[in-house]
Amino acid sequence: MAKNKMRSVFYDLYPEDQAAEMEMRSLLLRGLERWLADSGMTQTEAAKVLGVTQARVSDLKRGKISQFSLDLLVRLAARAGLHPKLKLAA
Image (cartoon, rainbow, N blue to C red):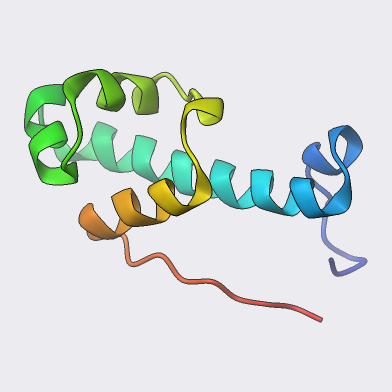
């Protein structure tokens, strides 16, 4: 991580490899939460777009990060049209 960037709290709570994953999951989850809020869709409508149940959409809205793997969040973001990308920094 660049020295001038602020470290996320995950780096205080987890080993570096797990912190990196948690940071990515958090970013994807926040993006999906914004998408849900801005879409004007009901949870049922959003569930159809995302290919999940309404209960899973509710978990997204509530920010239940532990309920979602990184790969699932990437797939959901892609289904929402958020075009998730990964960028590596040395």
